[in-house]
Amino acid sequence: MERAKKDQVPSHVIDKALDKASGAGGEDFSAARYEGFGPGNVMVIVDCLTDNPNRTFGDVRGCFTKTKSKIGTPGSVSHMFDHCAIFSFAGSDEDAVLEALMEADVDVTDIEQEGDRITVFAPHTDYAKAKQALLDAFGEIDFEADEIQFLPQTTTPVEGDDVAMFEKFLAMLNELDDVQNVYHSGELPETSDH
Figure 1 (cartoon, rainbow, N blue to C red):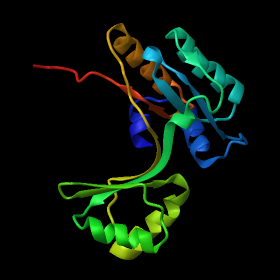
Figure 2: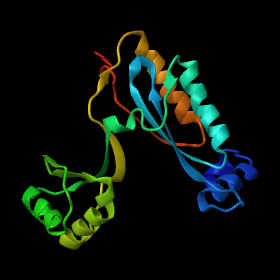
Figure 3: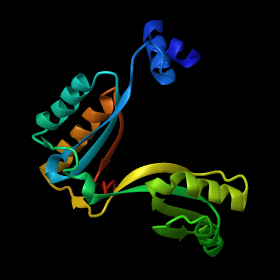
Figure 4: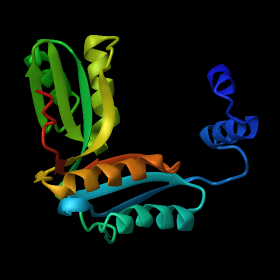
């Protein structure tokens, strides 16, 4: 609050943001998901929280059309993504983690170990079960990642003129108040600073 006031955000804007967060203000917020193909034919899923689906759809569609992209019908790209629960935390005993999850009947998709960090992937439907199993087995865990994500099954390289257009597209989406998350299959070239 203090920070917002210091930045001279009008108090009615702060109140509206707080209302939105607490679900007050008599407005009904509902989740909306839009799918389509962004610049470079990259598959895109946009998750929104909106009190006015028509306005949000118009705003999101505007980002697609202004970047010569195409918004699709529900399901047009989401079948090309895996909807997963992802947990990442410090640890080195991959076997113990797998065992704890198997005992809890979690259908583990994948476990990766890099250095002293373990990352677990499970179906989104097992999110609560997996988290509980990890906490039961290892006590308090400081999760670096604890979320449900859409992971693309294949990635699409973004090249040439599409790169700038794709970055503009993502920036436009991220400027929309109603957009919560943007998932995409784009693989942008490493920016070379050397």
